[in-house]
Amino acid sequence: MRVNDRHVSFYYENDDDIGEIRIDKKSTALLVIDMQHVFITRPVLNNPTEAEKKNAERWEQFYKAIDEWVVPNNQRLLKAFRERGMEVVFAKIQCQKKNGADRSLDQKATGYNELLLPPGDPAAEIVPELAPIGDEIVIKKTTDNMVAGTPVRLWLRNMGIDTVVVAGVLTDQCVSGTVRGFADESFNVWLIEDATRAATQKIQDAELEILNNIYCHVVSTDELIGALDK
Image 1 (cartoon, rainbow, N blue to C red):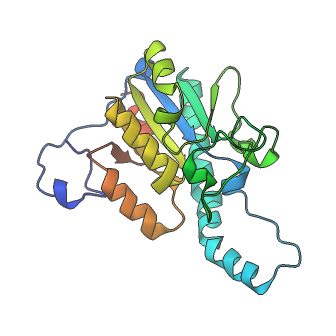
Image 2 (cartoon, rainbow, N blue to C red):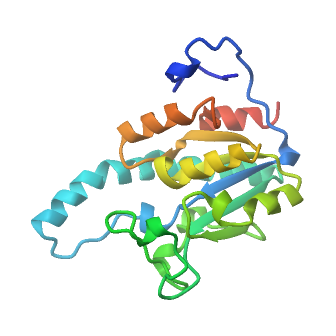
């Protein structure tokens, strides 16, 4: 089944089973992934080198997207779920050991994914615009796929949740891994196209097409919120 004509891959071009977005508020949770300073706050460079300037230019389109629509749409989703008394869960990358010994191999690798965020590191905090409130669950993880790396599946099942709405970053990494993990555990998954972001629009579009209709349904913030009270 597919619910719209966007991000349709080769596999689903001939799928005539068209459905509607249906959300059971009692069994659905919003999952906000890795909206942390380390990933979405534009770095401040003091006396940058030419190489640092060029790298900042490469990433500017990402931070612009984060500022203009990813954070605002996450705020809209949080407001909509909270107003309706629905569950909200946050995930963030942070290790338990100060030396990061408990990190998964991809976070110990070299390059972009090398990441050490020990307890107390302010870079690991969720940005204040999206801060958890009340007893909303915040799950620390050292894996891309939070289903594999945390007890979240068990906790959600205990809470009567069988459907997750996923937003956050990065679409092709932690978001994708988590979407696949929930799908493999037989959760219904809705992925919000304008509340997620990969490093570039090209990667974003490719990953949405790969995930859509197989592991999740890709919909917009407006579409999801519009379905909450149907």
